[in-house]
Image (cartoon, rainbow over all chains, first blue to last red; front, side, top):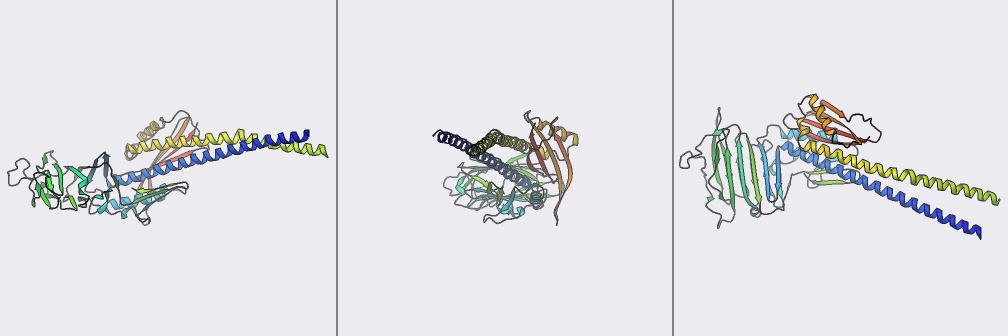
Length: 298
Length: 147
């Protein structure tokens, strides 16, 4: 009887110890796994942002968002061969950054791998969900274009454009609106005195500053963008005369500025009537570790 | 026979008990602390590199003097708590379009927390950067460990 009692007590003590050890080991394994997941998630997050930031640096465009406002700071034309930069950067990731524990790939919308330089410049920054596009015809960045489908145009409240010309001065009269060579002539001209009764009306504040710091602000602020308005802004430098062509409308074109090789810095503020928007590049960045992955538009 | 069984029983019981207590007292607490330390080191390293990249510091190093870069890297190491040690290595490459595309190491700089010998438990974080004007590609590697 006594033997059985000691056996039972011993059995219970060992059972308790075993249970405790099991619980402790289990907790420890779970804690280790949680920490490993967190470190992995953090690594993915930082790697994803790292690559995403660098791609924007190579395109030489800074995007800033604040509530309804999207500010696009751009330098045009491209001073470097952007396609080469993108190709080299992708190879740099493969040769110097990637390791066996992390995969970094660029994909198209179907999930197929693409080269970074395959991103089409004519649909570069897409403002979603309204699919308003800020783009260039090619990576030379000699023209900048903002496009919107007529059904989404109403998301744009107004656009403010400030263009600093770096290497040319005005070759037109920017002070006297009655002068024959006045800078602010539109031909064709679909500007309107107010947006009342106009189906697709753009409120636009367009300003140019030349290399001598002269500032010209267009008097026209409202445009019927179902028709096209065009301005040829005369500029010159020591060697030649140019026209900077600005088209407003017709939709899908909202604004199209053709630089004619003029070097400039532009600040474009697009105010939407909603805060509910985000910006996508036409490439998906896939960062994968053994524990997790982040797959999203750059 | 009975004495022999009791002796064997006692030996097994003692061995098991010793093994279990050893497990509890050594393996569990040490493993937990190491993991959380690793996370802290990783957090701090990634944050410092993100600040350096986000403020344009990494890109700015391209073309600067060796002494300036060494000193500035040392400045960022002072952000580490006193119980942490770190070594920042900055490598700057030029790219050559191929095939095969290759990268040539142009400059390399390194700075380490003073009086901190490296241990075996090192957490490694890294960050790339690009200098658009000079067409240079950079890699910053940050090793962190406990003092």
